[in-house]
Length: 453
Image (spheres, one colour):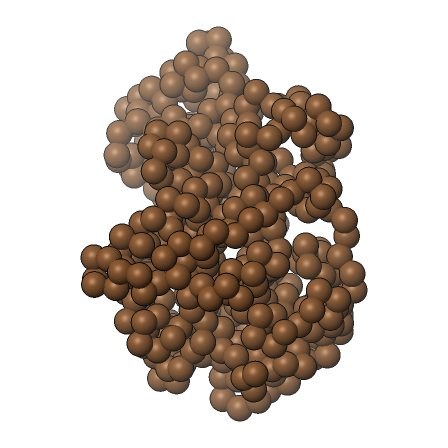
């Protein structure tokens, strides 16, 4: 058994730095590369792609990432764990296999494909069987929006990833796993943590939570003393050096920008955290109040003392559904009286929409430069040198939203003076994808692992 297992984060979301995976593999010794691509809305985007082309539905950035780190996988033994499979993990695996063959590595990758999280085709059977998938915020049953559902995926835990690694996979592709499982599974596999090692499992979850957002814990998007964070243009992505007892060190490769300190780790720990005593995952419930952070040298923070307890009998389900249409247009008004001009333009536009008989579920106005960020807390911004009027509508009638998009441009000549910043043509009508969080019994979610070579 290894004394130290290094798990490096190379992506924090779909759209993150394309070069980060390669830099993590080439920048120093690592055992695993963890790539996190999925957010709640991402699943619905991928589902729509799959509907247009059955071979799609996965994070295609992952294919380029694999191509860039293929030498590290084959020559250094780096293993990759990613949730890039989205709603089509098998097609994602096929694309990875094609990349290996293109580079003369046919048969040298063992790809573990984890499926079972996608519940879309089973929704009607599940609802009929008494699983109402009630909205965790409102209590409404999913049946109220069933005809609008675009995707439905359960957050699965580390067990099928561990199974794939035990089967010799050097690339593991999942659908909607938890972000934290991508880091915890390699540690659990290497150290042999069993399903009831609550404290060590919780430590693995905390490790995953810290590095799941990439460079956000190593200096990026950092509030504390942000002016002094060095060389963000070459920010170092984080890694954890895990030990069998559950303690670990968060660090980054030497000679990279950013920084790893108790402060940066603390900021990441409170990201997306509800009750700090009950960070719930499919594998374990972690108690964040027990975490100890200790400096361990330059750009090194030791994490220890994590406690955990048994998980619940539920899995969270991320459902995305179609919730109408929206369009947002902007105009910029210059000094003097920029805010007053923008407010008049807002009133004029609302009156025109009313005269046209257009009705919307919501009309939202923001005065960027005056109150868009801080609202009433911004205080008196009457003398702001410039203000951007951001005007948006939302509704179920696409034609009404489409008509609104034609009413912004006339304000350039028909509204208050000194307007600028209108470029790019009419606002675009966009489909609204809404989020429906729900719970489901673990017993009805059946994962499986398929090995491809």
